[in-house]
Amino acid sequence: MIRRRTFIKGVSTGVAGTAILASTASGQSDESALIVDDFDGDPGWPGENDLGEWTDAGELAEEASVVDIGQGLSYGPALRLAYDGGGWYGTNVGRDVSAYDRLELVVRGADGGEEDDVRLEVGGVEDALPELTDDEIDTSVSTVAVDLEAAGVDRTAVDDVWLTFGPEASGRIDLVEVRFAGGGDGGGDGPPAVGGNDERPTDPDGDGEYEDINGNGEVDYDDVVTYFDNMESDAMTDNAEYYDYNGNGEVDYADLVDLFGEV
Image (cartoon, rainbow, N blue to C red; front, top):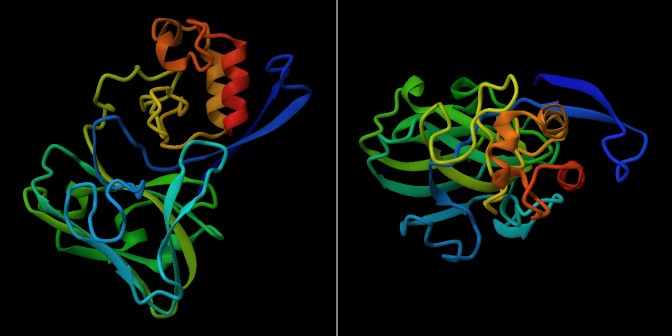
């Protein structure tokens, strides 16, 4: 996993001193997504996913349960899957997903590195998760993205998504969301890429405010740095409605402090 450390001094009077900032590379997410499971209670889990189809989990070390993970953001609920020598989570899709080019798992691990414990089946293609993506599961919420075309998935007939845990594996993951995501340029009506980032910003918690400035699928310290470095750029000032976290109609240091508080 690539990590970058940098420093930002005196972000505002609300953030004193020097903060050491770290960011984690992960999969990308975008606004045009087909939500399969988000465990928000509508519909209630288990039994029915957000597509109105079957979903469940079993053979785990502990019964799967929906928990509130918070993490300083509005992630809220996640499905906790604790495994020891086996276990599975499955959800039916049963439709054409040709409009989407990635399967995304928004997830965090108890220890990090849990991708080594997981086998993923999507649309009949099955393999160890590290064979299908370079993204890793971290101890903070991040997005693990699988390129469906590269994996050989027939997107016209994706039957289901399954996660199974190996017989030698022991650990725990919190699954926040399962979704199919669209075009590589970010799609949707969200703001353009900021600074030198290739990916467009995203709204991980779905509140209409784009806190994931660098587009890596999570809110992290690199987003604070990117905000600080680009808050006077056209990409941000011309799209202030996406970055105006305090609702005063403009991009300013108070918004930067709000963003810092969510990391």
